[in-house]
Amino acid sequence: MQSTTFWAGAMLCAIGIAAAIAAPHYRMGSLAQMGPGYFPLILGVLLASLGAITCVQAVAKGGGHRLATPPWRQLVCIPLCVVAFALLVERAGLAIAVVVTVLIGCLGGHQFRPIEAIISAVMLAILTCALFVRLLGLPVPIGPTGL
Amino acid sequence: MDTINHLWMGFGIAVSPINLLYCLIGATVGTLVGVLPGIGPLTTIAMLLPITFKLPALPALIMLSGIYYGAHHAGSTTAIMLNMPGEPTSVVICIDGHPMARQGRAGPALCISAIGSFIAGCLSILVIAFCSPILARVALSFGPPEYCAVVIMALIAASVLSNAPVILTIAMTVLGVLLGCVGNDMISGERRFDFGSPDLADGINFVALAVALFAFADILSRAGQPDQTRRFDKIRGLLPTRADLAASWKPILRGTALGAAFGVLPGTGPLVSSFASYSLEKRLARDPSRFGNGAIEGVAGPESANNAAAFTHFIPMLTLGIPAGAAMALMLGALMIQGVTPGPQVMTDHPDLFWGVIASMWLGNGMLLILNLPLIGVWIRLLRVRYRILYPAILVFCCIGVYSVNNSTFDVLLAGGLGLVGYLFAMLDCPPAPVILGFILGPILEVNLRRTLLISRGDFSVFVTRPISLGFLLLAVALLGAIALPALRRRR
Image (cartoon, rainbow over all chains, first blue to last red; front, top):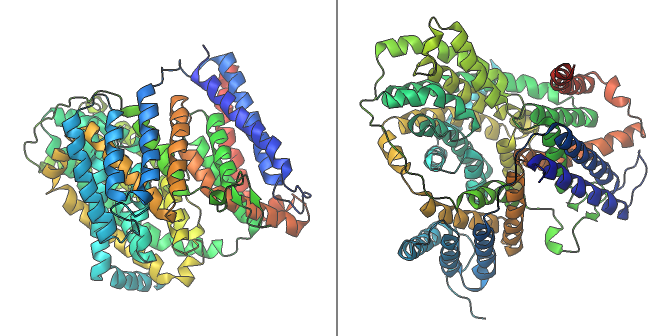
């Protein structure tokens, strides 16, 4: 299994190539009158080259370390709670969004302690509503809006 | 002298009750959040940035500055008490600060570090006050080629002075610049890379990016780990002995000088300054073997260097409009949202903003001293907060923060997705800070590059025929050379 540095270089090289391919879809123009596509093309080529160099260096010299196993539960739960927040905050209001976000977030922790999670959720909901909506005037509903 | 008059005016503005209040809130919140485990200054600023949007420009900047230096200084509290640096620049403080704590001398260590920081802050704010007008006057003669050259130098300096391999860091910077291309092209008005989505028309929300790469990525790495039990050593008395004070005052002054000089450098100038101060103190000490076992000079010097650098770090941003690091980049973004375009004209167009902020930094510096000494018991108690309770709160605050920038749930979703990307970066040891720097500086670079080439009709020699631009580019080349040469020599 290649090292982290190798995959880092590979990833950046891939992004660079993608950018270099996408850039010419926009008007290129000339050097003196650069169109919107020119600069991204330069960047894409530069990024791809640097990524490739990093890859080659990783294979030749080593460096970096082995990839760790990804923490799957965290990688699912944490983005899920952010998505939940995005979906709920305008429809169900800030309070409910916060409660759901905290509960799902706690599910993503090392140990799920239900009582702690519920207390945190409720307290945070109260705190954030008081701070952001009442005090700072954030234009977001606290409770569910009529659908 | 003119500067004195301006400072006087600045103080007049900064001591108004509202501005004093925001200064206090900023410094307190910055210290509070900075002390909490798992939240560094960058995450703190990204999280609290949106709170300042509702405020007018001056109080917002005052509060953000307070958060910045409050969080910065909180890093040394955790370094001394827990051997856990709050952020990279406090790593050096652990070396002698934690042994002092283990010897029961945490009190004097914290006290000297607070005093050193205060003195360093006062002196470096004077540096800011006197050097900025000169720098701004020079910058007023900057044209597009000079801005282009400055940005290139800043990006290269930031990449060279980092811990990660140089090529990788430069690549991450380029990635950041590329991300900055998403959205409206400033010169032609056409939309780029927006995947047809109207939400990306104005580009990626920079708070979403910062929160994703720093806060979310960090939480993704840490949430699954079991809470570590931390041992706390008792604090047996706060005041340093006369011997401590006598040993510390010269390191404090030397550290301040180093920090003030290095802090202006883009990238990890502050990091370099604290290491440089430690090496200097060790070399100058009569008994170097004490270092590593609780030598107070090893705390006083680097801490002062740290704080001085944190303040002078503002200079490029305030005078040129070029952020010297990721934290400054976030503040620049905040200023732009407020409608203030940072640059040398800020001093002439918004003198109240500029001098008010500088004066308020001085007051905030004093507030930090008061916050960090008597309230040390409170902060210590906060250190005990379990991460598993903390990170859902961080998640919520970040989500609300990102949402509040544009009242956009798309931004929150974007932040969530980018958080996974940020985790990927962390897993692959790719440094995220250059991405933010490149993201903020990229548009400046592109606009000025295109303007330069437009005026010179595609002629690149204009970069080397104009002296200031040539100077910056030579500096960039020199920095790259300084890194490349040792590598070449090693291969032989």
